[in-house]
Length: 124
Image 1 (tube, helix red, strand yellow):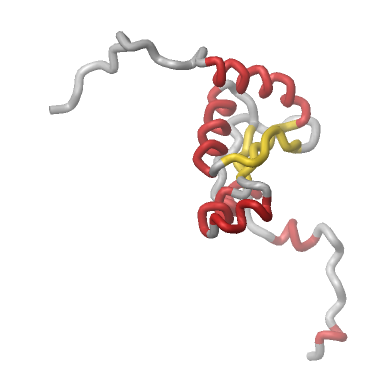
Image 2 (tube, rainbow, N blue to C red):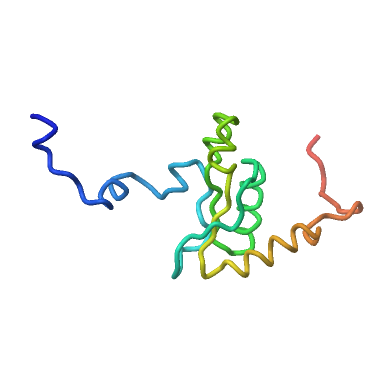
């Protein structure tokens, strides 16, 4: 069979044929809330993979659907970080403003633990 005899697939068919959500394919976290209305939008870029995962986890703990993107390529080949713009953080468009508020509170240190925080008994 020659390549010329194979009919091209519709544009969306290749994406639909891939198993699992995009975050699972890229190693990113799964959203903790079901996707709602709106598209995924880029909230932050030029992050390290660790920053992207940490911020995505913070947003997910607040009930916001968030994904860390491009973490695999940046970790596998740090020289490509400049080309892809570093790791990124995506949220649903409908949750974008709420996500900005949570990230601002995180950066102000509102989620930090005090020096006298009791972690409980240690295993010994």
